Image 1 (tube, rainbow, N blue to C red):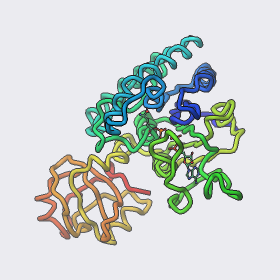
Image 2: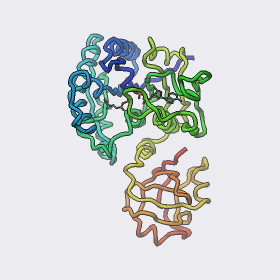
Image 3: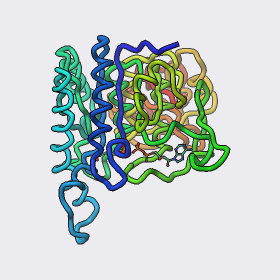
Length: 359
Ligand SMILES: Nc1ncnc2c1ncn2[C@@H]1O[C@H](COP(=O)(O)OP(=O)(O)O)[C@@H](O)[C@H]1O
Ligand SMILES: N[C@@H](CCC(=O)OP(=O)(O)O)C(=O)O
């Protein structure tokens, strides 16, 4: 059985694009572009999320050690992104395909106006048969507000664009059930349904040039699959990997998608860092919210307003041990919410349509 996705986000990690000596691996980039061109020629839409700006920059300039990591990242990315996008543009051009550069920061996803503005631009590029090449704008991003890594960014882009699939290319065959180098470890081929605690077997170590590591890949993949998007994690250093993944012809990890969520829920799913206020809910409300029924958050299920918010703000819903259970848009401010705590027959604080629950 092959996978017949119409809109696909492909994320390529730094390690796939870089040789062991740190120089860009042009042959590999060319080979991947060739596969993407073949997928595109089948009438499919492809959005590329590519890391590699910092790695490319490293191949062009040596920076004195007296500069801190942030300054070095900004300098390398600023120089390296030009080289990276030129490389893509030249290779795509040889297949008669136009690509474009889209550099984003977390701020661009924060409020719904910015989010929809960016979505409109990406939709327009796709309508014009262009392949958007997306990367974080490391030059202007404020360190504390950055994406954990481009895996997180790829998950956001896939949900924003209602993609059917996200393919994450890294330098191992998928998520292993132990150390990938240890004897006896094997690739987990399918992840379905219930939430898996990957920290049990995925080490926090990452590859030579990667930023986030396999743990972020695992959590992002789980979240993205819960929103209705299939996620494939595969080895981008293998020949014909993209076509093999789509033909289901190679061992890799696949997260089976849940039912598709609405656009608003997809946006909320990635809004934790933009949440302004928080409320604590009781056990009964928690059970009702996480059940399969469409349930709004009513004041009777609230036990405390932990941090203030205004009407329209994104708020966190936490349980009695302060564990995050969901995110929603407040229908009224924290003052009114406090007055109504525990009361019956009150308007929902968060309506179901504006509520995203963690899986
Ligand atoms: N259980 C595991 N399964 C697969 N990879 C793992 C596991 N635990 C740790 N890793 C490490 O995660 C690395 C990939 O993540 P990362 O460095 O973020 O790559 P990328 O640059 O592709 O984003 C692998 O090279 C591997 O060393
Ligand atoms: N924006 C950075 C990407 C950093 C990053 O997330 O890398 P990776 O973990 O390899 O996907 C760059 O282009 O170098």
